Amino acid sequence: MLYKERIFYIIAVIILLSLLLQSVLTLIISILCSIFTYPFYRKLKLIKRRKILGKEKYKTQICLYPNLSYALILLISVLAPFAVLLVLVIPQISDGLILLHQLKNSKFQLPQAWIDTYNTFRVKLSSYPHIDKIVTDFINNVDSFINDLFMALVNKGMEFLGGTMSFCWSMILFFILTILFSNYAIQSRTIVCRITQLPVQQVRRFVRAVNNALRSVLLGIVLVAIIQGFLSGIGFAVAGVKQPAFWGLLSTFAAPIPFVGTVFVWLPLAVSIWFSGNTFAAISLAVWSILIVEGSDNILQPLFLRQGIRAPLSVLLLTIVCGITVFGPIGLIIAPVMLAIAIQLIAEADLGFDRAR
Image (cartoon, rainbow, N blue to C red):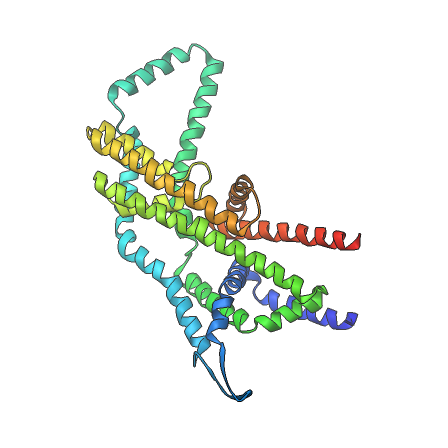
């Protein structure tokens, strides 16, 4: 391909990207959503061919309005979770946050004797200023971390909504871009091949790697987190916890956090129920959470994640932690995809070296 024509393609892509500079995350999510849903979009546009005596007689589309059908299905898939959130959870959020602060201020209803013993220990420890400072700093850091985590589970899960107008614009832009990327997928792939000078089959392998990674993320992280939140909500309701939908939502947000997950939610509640005098409910909640809620995570998450991304589970979990740190909640999706692309790059490089030998 001529150098000048490649420059024209690159300039055209830069111009288009500059128009979406303020909506980079929306653009990335639209591209990923288009890659993930494109096989379904192709099925909507399939052509049914009928042949008589070896000659094509006629052809008809299975779906008369594929773009409209695709847009409606995409709209329902995105808005359905928000409708459930609006109906079931939002009415309980205010009371749930009040209860959360009450539990924290009452030290989750620990017995007064325990609190007195702790205060006596701290008084004795004050005789050793250096050790006392270390212990105080550690306790303050832990308390601050738990408090920030609880607040982040709510705030980070909701802050992406932003202002009403900003959220509506982002959603409209997301739908439009996703439909455009799906509709012009072949043309987009051609442009990528011409700019990068990569063979079509190689680009397809990268797209397939991203698609597999997205499937793993949706099944291994998002779906498993929703399942854990739902199971936790059932446990909270049976144990008599007020606002079980709110605590189930917190469990959903906490579930993707590696090595900790829903423990940050159900353990303080179980302790609070225990010291309120309802021993059976506390034990039942703990057993349900350990065996059913955590058990589903230990079984389903490794099963789904490792099917689409060829990496050890520990590497995947570390990638998710780094992704959340850098990108926020959306890092749950972006980070595993970046890992899948990096692994595919290494695989393509190894394949090239093997062929060169």
